[in-house]
Image 1 (cartoon, rainbow, N blue to C red):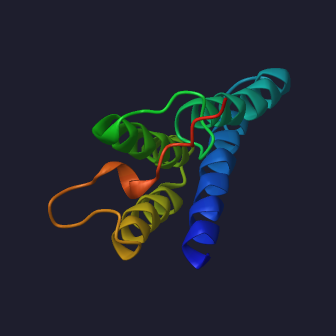
Image 2: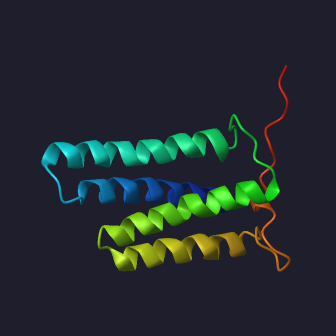
Image 3: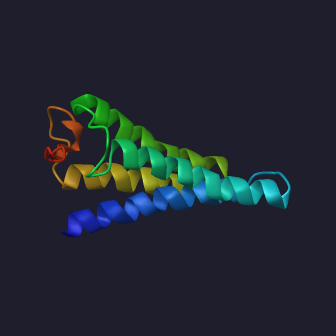
Length: 122
């Protein structure tokens, strides 16, 4: 339960990071507002389609691990690009530490973060 809450808060942090990056662009206010809304929307769409518990596309093992890792890395890169280097490092460290603490990355390597695919519905 606590692990799921931490994961959810990290997901929200990635979306906030993308919005922060969009608003920090050196452009006019209209462009910055559009980027502030569009960047998190694109990330949320990707998460919903490929990584959410009820995702439409169930990625196999390493593909899911790679997508989730790249998705969280996008949040850290967005913060770094916006000039918030310490926040970028904190987000990346929180992601890695939480995965190890939740036992999702055993010594043998990441097994797709151990989330079972949704059950088949008829």
